[in-house]
Image (tube, helix red, strand yellow):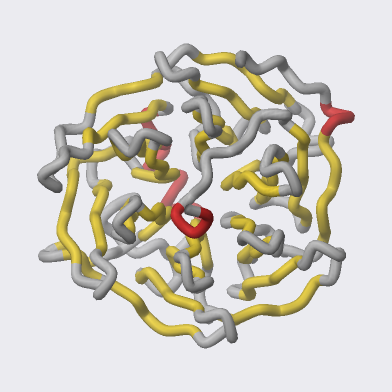
Length: 295
């Protein structure tokens, strides 16, 4: 079923107090987790209670859950993928994948076997926003996609990516999709049955607005956030682009970063905002693709 463009009054505030969250994820019980620029992971329960879940000591970006309720976080400040247990204990899961040292891990996604795919945006450790702005002005192919095994060991899947950012696996588990922020496009990396991978191929182009986060619905539509222009777009399974939400003045969405499905019917979309202290919610009426922790 095709998407219709949403109006701004359909966007509501799910909760405030997230302090510039980039990552957001919703568990099976309906708890929402968001990480702020202050290094604090906050947990919002279904009844609206906000608590501090963990402190990473860095700057958390994308997040993913495993089936045991552990939260895996790409922490830009720590240059590592962190593991947070259900009790809030934080440890380093991986800071290297084969010969590649993680420098700017950005977004994680699990495959059906429990392997964690992670985008590493570029080959330097982020020290300031100015570093990112310099790369936006002069794009360089120094990003990578890696695969981490359940034991934390890993290997490089693809290199030569332009600021590899949001990452997702399609409902058929046929490919890993990676947003190239400084190219304003998305690439598709085929997942072969023997465990090998294809070369990155462009799937969607001219996305605009420095694409950041994405999520698949159950039908294979990809929702992409564009923080520089406060817009959400949809790529259908053929790669055709349409606008889902447009908020040029930032009235309800201000630099939307990552997005995640949740809600009682798993058809609400939650949006983290880098330049705001809230997580927003919009009812889509399209069910999300169940991620690893829900299968």
